[in-house]
Length: 375
Ligand SMILES: [Zn+2]
Ligand SMILES: [Zn+2]
Image (tube, protein in one colour):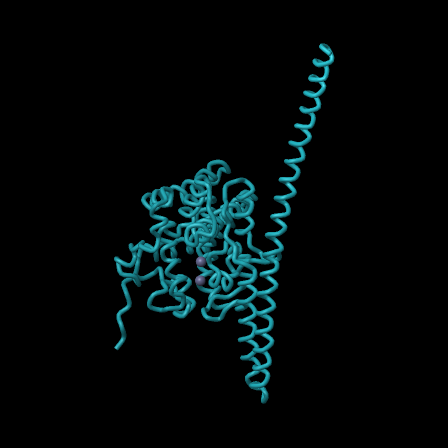
């Protein structure tokens, strides 16, 4: 007997289908007949990047995972950009996302479980009422966000904000560049479709395609190509094991503009308290995963038992050395800090000494002069 599928969420179906139709069919026809300017392309790139960065730096790394703290003005911008990206309120998005991390790949609990296939994790999960109304509006895992004024304001006025951004921005640009329909198609529809599907790739492709250098306990993958499309979120294997890190691409050569944006915001005093995973933990996770992968690879060899035993021995020695190395490094750093403090204190003391010495000499002269007068 076939189990009944939950009812369709028509509003979402209409939004996804109509924006796709406008972007993929109507927009090209319109621009073939009416021409397209540089402004259309520039603003497409700007608004697309703005919306995606508001999702990655705001919805994801700030609100879902609390990997840093942000000034209210930055949070306000993220709230507007999130409504522009049309991905529900920050509160709702974060709640779903926290469940995703907690129950990753669990088909009954993970709202966009990758184990239910590409289509489901990409978009299917939003097309039917898979959650009960109680589950849908249960924000008990986001009590911290419920205390945030900007988050609650955006949640309350999400629909008018989404309409304002999605119609208001293209119309303003249309008035400026004398092409309201063109801008509505480009900045309204094309931008929205790009925003939607690149973000959705993180739930679908980033759980299917790529490498697993840190863990294979879940389906999340690291993928440099996806990182380009998703503003750094393609390093999803790292992210699922160290979700409290403000970085997803931890190496300097990894493309993670969200990380660069957050760091730039610290220079502007708009962000602070950036959280990072200790290097030792990262190195240990990588070494363990490499050991497990290599053991899998040598399984067909006749002497794989002996080989595996040797690998384990080397691995244990490596972990021992690694622990010692990082422990000493920590000590060295704290010593250096102490030395710097001592150097500073010494310098302050020296300045004080010189000042007092000068005052003393002056007083001595004054005293001697006075005494000489009456000697
Ligand atoms: Zn994920
Ligand atoms: Zn996450």
